[in-house]
Image (cartoon, rainbow, N blue to C red; front, side, top):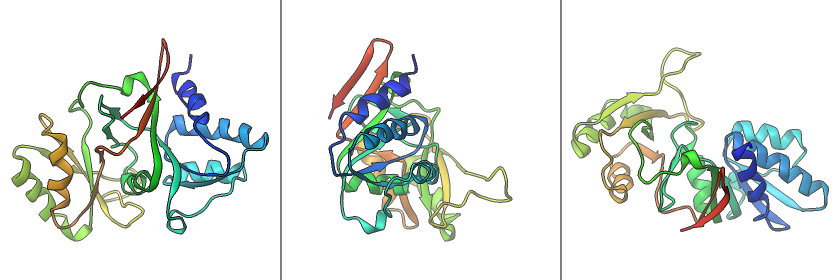
Length: 226
Protein backbone atom coordinates (compact mmCIF):
# COMPACT_ATOMS: atom_id res chain seq x y z
CA UNK A 1 0.00 0.00 0.00
CA UNK A 2 1.32 3.42 -0.97
CA UNK A 3 0.81 5.43 2.21
CA UNK A 4 1.43 8.79 0.58
CA UNK A 5 -1.22 8.04 -2.01
CA UNK A 6 -3.71 7.07 0.70
CA UNK A 7 -3.01 10.31 2.58
CA UNK A 8 -3.65 12.28 -0.61
CA UNK A 9 -6.86 10.38 -1.26
CA UNK A 10 -8.15 11.42 2.16
CA UNK A 11 -7.05 15.02 1.68
CA UNK A 12 -9.35 15.44 -1.31
CA UNK A 13 -12.37 14.89 0.92
CA UNK A 14 -11.57 18.13 2.79
CA UNK A 15 -11.81 20.30 -0.34
CA UNK A 16 -15.05 22.20 -0.84
CA UNK A 17 -16.53 23.43 -4.11
CA UNK A 18 -15.40 26.86 -5.37
CA UNK A 19 -12.44 26.89 -2.98
CA UNK A 20 -9.08 28.54 -3.41
CA UNK A 21 -6.71 25.63 -2.82
CA UNK A 22 -3.04 26.08 -1.98
CA UNK A 23 -0.54 23.32 -2.66
CA UNK A 24 3.03 22.85 -1.50
CA UNK A 25 5.62 20.46 -2.90
CA UNK A 26 6.48 16.78 -2.80
CA UNK A 27 5.35 13.36 -3.92
CA UNK A 28 2.24 13.35 -1.72
CA UNK A 29 1.14 16.65 -3.25
CA UNK A 30 1.66 15.16 -6.72
CA UNK A 31 -0.79 12.40 -5.82
CA UNK A 32 -3.20 15.02 -4.51
CA UNK A 33 -3.11 16.81 -7.87
CA UNK A 34 -4.08 13.54 -9.57
CA UNK A 35 -7.08 13.03 -7.29
CA UNK A 36 -8.15 16.66 -7.61
CA UNK A 37 -8.12 16.30 -11.39
CA UNK A 38 -10.63 13.48 -11.09
CA UNK A 39 -12.89 15.66 -8.94
CA UNK A 40 -12.60 18.63 -11.30
CA UNK A 41 -13.47 16.37 -14.23
CA UNK A 42 -16.59 15.45 -12.23
CA UNK A 43 -17.59 19.11 -11.80
CA UNK A 44 -15.72 20.44 -8.76
CA UNK A 45 -14.78 24.11 -9.29
CA UNK A 46 -11.44 25.17 -7.81
CA UNK A 47 -8.78 27.82 -8.13
CA UNK A 48 -5.17 27.07 -7.18
CA UNK A 49 -2.10 28.79 -5.83
CA UNK A 50 1.20 27.05 -5.17
CA UNK A 51 4.51 27.73 -3.48
CA UNK A 52 6.29 25.15 -5.66
CA UNK A 53 7.67 25.40 -9.20
CA UNK A 54 7.29 21.64 -9.67
CA UNK A 55 3.69 21.62 -8.48
CA UNK A 56 2.94 24.60 -10.71
CA UNK A 57 4.04 22.57 -13.74
CA UNK A 58 1.68 19.74 -12.73
CA UNK A 59 -1.22 22.18 -12.36
CA UNK A 60 -0.54 23.85 -15.70
CA UNK A 61 -0.21 20.48 -17.41
CA UNK A 62 -3.74 19.66 -16.23
CA UNK A 63 -5.01 23.10 -17.33
CA UNK A 64 -6.04 24.01 -13.78
CA UNK A 65 -6.80 27.69 -13.08
CA UNK A 66 -3.78 29.03 -11.18
CA UNK A 67 -3.28 32.42 -9.58
CA UNK A 68 -0.12 34.07 -8.28
CA UNK A 69 0.18 34.04 -4.50
CA UNK A 70 0.49 37.83 -4.56
CA UNK A 71 -2.91 38.18 -6.23
CA UNK A 72 -4.95 36.57 -3.43
CA UNK A 73 -5.61 37.79 0.10
CA UNK A 74 -6.69 34.46 1.56
CA UNK A 75 -6.53 30.75 0.75
CA UNK A 76 -9.38 28.48 1.80
CA UNK A 77 -7.25 25.39 2.39
CA UNK A 78 -3.52 24.77 2.00
CA UNK A 79 -1.93 21.33 1.81
CA UNK A 80 1.75 20.61 2.26
CA UNK A 81 4.12 17.85 3.29
CA UNK A 82 7.01 18.05 5.75
CA UNK A 83 10.20 16.33 6.88
CA UNK A 84 8.92 15.74 10.40
CA UNK A 85 5.75 16.47 12.33
CA UNK A 86 5.41 16.31 16.11
CA UNK A 87 2.45 15.52 18.36
CA UNK A 88 1.47 19.20 18.58
CA UNK A 89 1.44 19.45 14.75
CA UNK A 90 4.58 21.56 14.64
CA UNK A 91 6.40 20.80 11.40
CA UNK A 92 9.94 20.96 10.12
CA UNK A 93 10.28 21.66 6.39
CA UNK A 94 13.95 21.56 5.48
CA UNK A 95 14.24 19.83 2.13
CA UNK A 96 12.88 22.02 -0.63
CA UNK A 97 14.28 25.38 0.40
CA UNK A 98 11.00 27.16 -0.39
CA UNK A 99 9.78 27.45 3.18
CA UNK A 100 9.29 31.23 3.04
CA UNK A 101 6.66 30.94 0.31
CA UNK A 102 5.21 27.84 1.95
CA UNK A 103 4.85 29.57 5.29
CA UNK A 104 3.21 32.55 3.62
CA UNK A 105 0.60 30.25 2.07
CA UNK A 106 0.08 28.45 5.38
CA UNK A 107 -0.45 31.76 7.16
CA UNK A 108 -2.94 32.92 4.52
CA UNK A 109 -4.98 29.73 4.78
CA UNK A 110 -8.24 29.34 6.65
CA UNK A 111 -7.16 25.73 7.09
CA UNK A 112 -3.56 24.50 6.85
CA UNK A 113 -3.33 20.73 6.51
CA UNK A 114 -0.12 18.70 6.62
CA UNK A 115 -0.22 15.39 4.79
CA UNK A 116 2.15 12.43 4.75
CA UNK A 117 2.95 8.94 5.97
CA UNK A 118 3.41 7.80 9.55
CA UNK A 119 7.22 7.78 9.27
CA UNK A 120 7.10 11.58 9.46
CA UNK A 121 5.07 11.61 12.70
CA UNK A 122 7.36 11.75 15.74
CA UNK A 123 7.19 12.47 19.45
CA UNK A 124 9.89 15.14 19.12
CA UNK A 125 12.09 16.24 16.23
CA UNK A 126 15.37 14.39 15.85
CA UNK A 127 18.60 16.15 15.01
CA UNK A 128 19.27 14.52 11.64
CA UNK A 129 17.20 17.24 9.95
CA UNK A 130 18.45 20.82 10.07
CA UNK A 131 16.49 23.94 10.73
CA UNK A 132 16.86 26.09 7.61
CA UNK A 133 16.94 29.86 7.57
CA UNK A 134 16.61 32.04 4.49
CA UNK A 135 18.77 35.14 4.74
CA UNK A 136 19.86 38.03 2.58
CA UNK A 137 23.31 37.61 0.99
CA UNK A 138 24.72 40.66 2.76
CA UNK A 139 24.26 38.87 6.11
CA UNK A 140 26.48 35.93 5.03
CA UNK A 141 28.98 36.27 7.89
CA UNK A 142 26.79 38.06 10.42
CA UNK A 143 23.91 35.58 10.71
CA UNK A 144 25.90 32.39 11.53
CA UNK A 145 27.82 34.29 14.19
CA UNK A 146 24.62 35.62 15.76
CA UNK A 147 23.01 32.17 15.72
CA UNK A 148 25.95 30.76 17.63
CA UNK A 149 25.67 33.58 20.14
CA UNK A 150 21.97 32.86 20.61
CA UNK A 151 22.04 29.06 20.80
CA UNK A 152 25.57 28.12 21.76
CA UNK A 153 27.27 25.20 20.10
CA UNK A 154 25.38 24.63 16.85
CA UNK A 155 26.68 23.60 13.45
CA UNK A 156 25.81 25.85 10.52
CA UNK A 157 26.46 25.24 6.83
CA UNK A 158 25.37 27.14 3.75
CA UNK A 159 23.43 25.04 1.26
CA UNK A 160 25.57 24.80 -1.86
CA UNK A 161 24.43 24.19 -5.41
CA UNK A 162 25.34 20.84 -6.96
CA UNK A 163 25.04 22.16 -10.52
CA UNK A 164 26.58 25.60 -9.95
CA UNK A 165 29.45 27.23 -8.16
CA UNK A 166 28.42 28.83 -4.88
CA UNK A 167 25.38 28.83 -2.62
CA UNK A 168 21.86 27.84 -3.59
CA UNK A 169 19.90 30.97 -4.52
CA UNK A 170 16.24 31.04 -3.48
CA UNK A 171 13.39 32.39 -5.58
CA UNK A 172 13.76 35.57 -3.52
CA UNK A 173 17.44 35.93 -4.41
CA UNK A 174 18.60 34.88 -0.95
CA UNK A 175 20.79 32.17 0.65
CA UNK A 176 19.85 29.11 2.70
CA UNK A 177 21.69 28.26 5.92
CA UNK A 178 21.27 24.81 7.49
CA UNK A 179 21.39 24.89 11.30
CA UNK A 180 22.04 21.62 13.14
CA UNK A 181 21.23 21.56 16.85
CA UNK A 182 22.87 18.95 19.09
CA UNK A 183 19.55 18.96 20.94
CA UNK A 184 16.49 21.00 20.07
CA UNK A 185 15.85 24.06 22.23
CA UNK A 186 12.27 24.87 23.20
CA UNK A 187 10.42 25.17 19.90
CA UNK A 188 8.48 28.23 21.06
CA UNK A 189 11.74 30.20 21.38
CA UNK A 190 13.31 29.39 18.02
CA UNK A 191 11.41 31.59 15.56
CA UNK A 192 11.28 34.71 17.76
CA UNK A 193 14.99 34.44 18.51
CA UNK A 194 16.07 33.86 14.91
CA UNK A 195 13.75 36.37 13.29
CA UNK A 196 15.06 39.03 15.66
CA UNK A 197 18.45 38.66 13.92
CA UNK A 198 18.69 41.25 11.17
CA UNK A 199 19.12 39.62 7.78
CA UNK A 200 17.05 36.50 8.43
CA UNK A 201 13.93 36.39 6.30
CA UNK A 202 12.23 33.19 7.54
CA UNK A 203 12.83 29.80 9.12
CA UNK A 204 11.71 26.29 8.17
CA UNK A 205 10.05 25.65 11.55
CA UNK A 206 6.26 25.79 11.20
CA UNK A 207 5.39 26.35 14.83
CA UNK A 208 1.75 26.40 15.92
CA UNK A 209 0.46 27.01 12.38
CA UNK A 210 -1.07 23.74 11.15
CA UNK A 211 -4.74 23.11 11.89
CA UNK A 212 -4.82 19.46 10.86
CA UNK A 213 -2.59 16.61 9.77
CA UNK A 214 -3.49 13.62 7.63
CA UNK A 215 -1.25 10.70 8.53
CA UNK A 216 -1.40 7.44 6.61
CA UNK A 217 -0.13 4.24 8.22
CA UNK A 218 -0.42 0.51 7.81
CA UNK A 219 -3.49 0.55 10.05
CA UNK A 220 -5.29 3.26 8.08
CA UNK A 221 -5.47 7.02 7.66
CA UNK A 222 -5.85 9.35 10.65
CA UNK A 223 -6.92 13.00 10.64
CA UNK A 224 -5.36 14.79 13.59
CA UNK A 225 -6.42 18.23 14.80
CA UNK A 226 -4.45 20.77 16.79
